Amino acid sequence: MMSKSKATAGQFNLTLEICREIPVPLCSQLEQSEIVKEIEARLSVVDQLEQTITDALQQAAALRQSILKKAFAGQLVPQDPNDEPAVALLARIRAAKASHDQR
Image 1 (cartoon, helix red, strand yellow):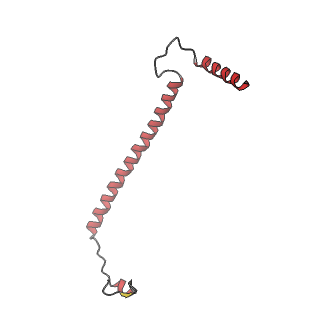
Image 2: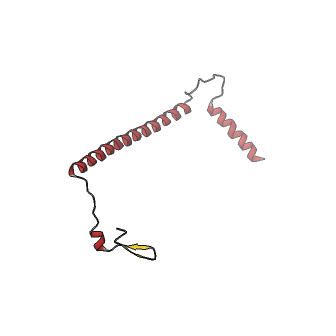
């Protein structure tokens, strides 16, 4: 191509006639079929992987919700019966904040 192209100031230009004469190698039908099969097989693997990831993300979201539910219910760690209830703690915090705001 470069031997047939015309150069002007270092810029190579190809004419349409030169481009038409360029041999373009093509695979045989058998090779093309094998390439298509390989691409389809790999795309199938990608689809399966995408589904696996989607399922794992859904499981992670469900697990996170379950953990939060157990945390708010006080079921993640053993509870000390001597601890004050959360309601009493929150009331005490609100009262302390209210008295601090009044100053």
